[in-house]
Amino acid sequence: MAHKIMVVEDDGPILEMMDLLIRKLGYEPVLVEDGLLALEMIRRAPPALILLDIMMVPIDGWKFLETLRGDEGMRDIPVIIFSAAPEVGERMAQIHDPRLGVLQKPVSLEDLKEGILKYLPKT
Image 1 (tube, rainbow, N blue to C red):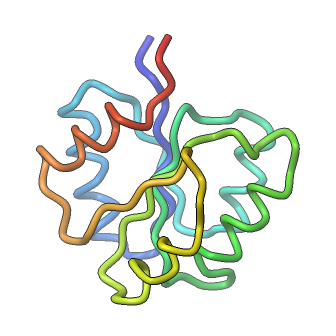
Image 2: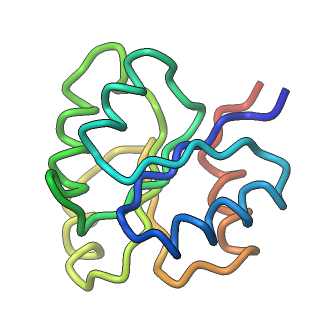
């Protein structure tokens, strides 16, 4: 059974592209356009890894991450932030979390593969 990778992204075309890339790499994508809905889904069935956009509504990626890390049942899930926002690098420099990575948009298949292999829990 393939690892489930949740993509939390509110841009439909990017979500579709990530779906194709994740499937091509042999994983099972779980696509969610709303951070609040994603948190509910994670509580019921945690994915192996989360790919997270930063600039979203009703909650942005930073608030999503804060909520995720504040919940004992979800805090250990690795997260890769993928964003084109320039402030991501600055914020990441302040966060010391070995379960947190970053990929710059647009993401290539090779970069996505490397990120997934680095952060996906080894089984």
